[in-house]
Image (cartoon, rainbow, N blue to C red):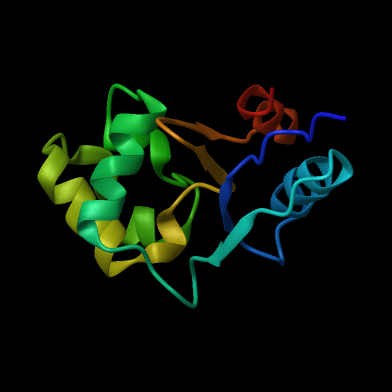
Length: 122
């Protein structure tokens, strides 16, 4: 009997977020235990954020940002069009990172809605 291939998924997760919890549940329901990164406690480094931008294929760092957070408004990030400055803001304020983000191999998705995480499963 052939064994199912192992799927390596990393989930940038906030356990207080219902969308993040739902994405985690969807992955687990399919028999996959993801590598969970509680990004508020373990903020991603700049190189990791750059990789997430590349893997998600977003046109701008802003697409990985929670634009309704207080920090976004206080830092006046809506007026900034410099991608490096937006990355700097994400490094300094991990709460601005959209959630959840799921990564499998050379592809990543912002799992909003949470069902988008299923795009990474065979």
